[in-house]
Each structure stands twice: as C-alpha cells, then as structure tokens.
Amino acid sequence: MKDLYVSWDEYNRLIEKLAIKVYDSGWEFDAIVCLARGGLRVGDVLSRLFDKPLGVLFASSYREQAGTLQSRLLIGDAIASAQPLPGPRWLLVDDLVDSGATLVEVLPALRDRYPQLQEMRSAVIWRKGASVAEPDYAIESLPTNPWIHQPFEEYDHMRPSDLKKRWGVAR
Image (cartoon, rainbow, N blue to C red; front, side):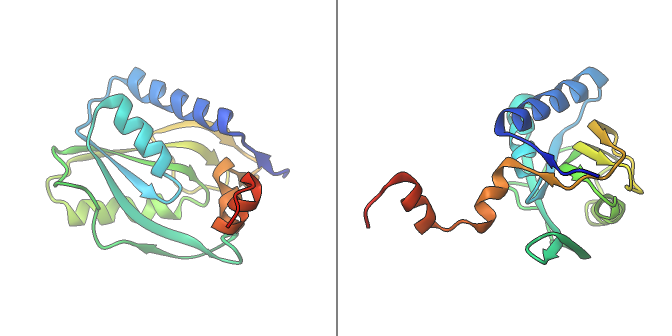
C-alpha cells in the first residue's frame, strides 16, 4: 500500500473527469452539496460547470494526529448556503470515500433534515477498497487503500509567515 501523491494538474483533471461522468449519466439534479473540507474544491467546480447552487455541509472525522487518524464523525447542524437549496434531487460531493462511514451517516441525516429531498446521489474522485459505501459516481477505485496526498495539504503545516519566506516578502 504505497501512498498516492496527486499534483494540482492531476487533481483538476480528475474533477473534470468526475463532471463528465455525472453529465454522461444523464441524471438531472437541482443542487450540489459538498462535504467540507475535502469536497469544497470539487463542489465549487461542479457547481460552476453545471450552473447549480452549492451548499456546504461540514463533516469531520480526521481530526487527530494531524488529520491522519479517523475518529467519530461529526456532522454540522445545517447546510451553509446563501438561500435554501432548491428541488428534490441533490448531488452530494466529496473528494473520496475512505472507510465509507461519512456517506453511510450523512445521507440519512440529510434525508431526515430536508424532507423535500427525494433523491440524492454521491460523487467522489476516489473510492478506497475498504469503503463500506459505494458512491454513485467515482473516478478512481483504489483497492489497496493508499493514503492520498492531495496538493492543498501543503497548507496544513504552513502559516502566513512561511508564505512570506517562500515569496521573499519583507515584514
């Protein structure tokens, strides 16, 4: 089980491939809900491409040991959006399904909280082999369950002072 390192170019290409996969399915949906933080970039791009409103639901299970150890899933109380999301069909997006616990818990929670929701499908870039959940749309299946190093993770251990050093900006 080697780690998987993903560049910005590859990451953006995979999001575009995910958009094409959803589009080619012919499924019509009314809004997109992304799971923050990992699904924020995916949700933003898909919202722009499909011209659909975007809601953000905060969910967190990787909080311990610098975000490398999964613990109990915490789900935000509500979807953050400028206005209520329209329609009965929503696309739930995230970067990946790892254990699958997030999808297993979030889907019924959303159905309970939003009674107008009649159909929800899920879309991710990566599905790990250990996942107990099967997303409706996924681009890469990873049977060996590698740790995925995404390009934005460099900011996890960086502070603004580090950026100043990187760019040679004086105080």
